[in-house]
Image (tube, rainbow over all chains, first blue to last red; front, side, top):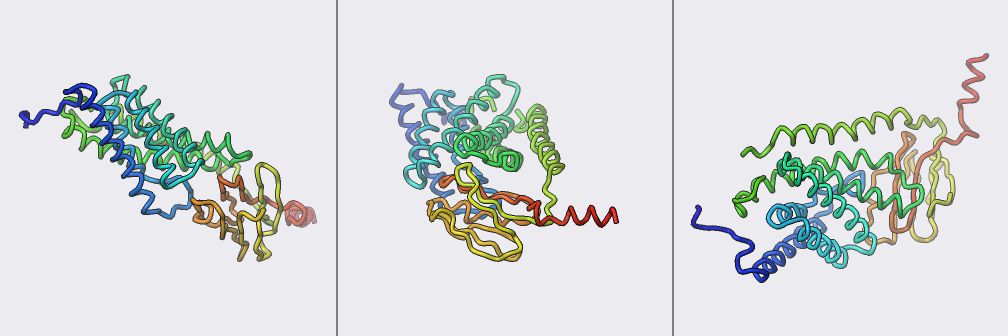
Length: 176
Length: 127
């Protein structure tokens, strides 16, 4: 097992760029898969957010800087491919707030990947509701916020469990 | 190394409690409409009010079409690509919202005070 070492920095910037490019591709693919299978839900905005598996992984393998960079690219690419200007705006506000919370929580060192990802899921939807309040006058946020927070929590926990299983295998030296 | 730490569990409980308390708080302000009407807002401005007990189809500014039938209201058509409002569940006298973010349209339920039975009910109690 130990003979197969993973060093995401070995080989310098080239290796890192290759890995990040691959992870970005994977994130976009996850977004595509989710766009393919629309789940009819009573409240819009509820989805698993498979791409966050990749974002949380980048946060743990590299750092928040790479995660922000890849997240922004992912949202813009998915937005251009399957969405519109609005989905890019909502996606960015959600994803960046989520990432901010996740990196801060991870930095405390007291929480594991499931806790970090759970907060990320909640903040993702909080960020989108904030964007909706800014964009649409009279947006009934009191109604949407608690429902979307719970949905984000559930999605975040599931993503955290997935990353908790995946990450020790692809990056064994990390602390999850 | 454990996958779920105690702090994680604590955080999850806190994160679950906040929206649940929020929902309970919302329920206290829940709508008790005896003469419900659908109110359509476009970009923050009131576009129209329509009683829920009269079946009809409403064209909202040429971008969306809304249907009232059997005391329920839902969006039947929208010109936006995501179609989220069309897939949203119908709303009825219990309240709720349907939002079309791209066209800035909000459908909500309010009580029509004029035709409301509450005044009559007051008289009834007094009598």
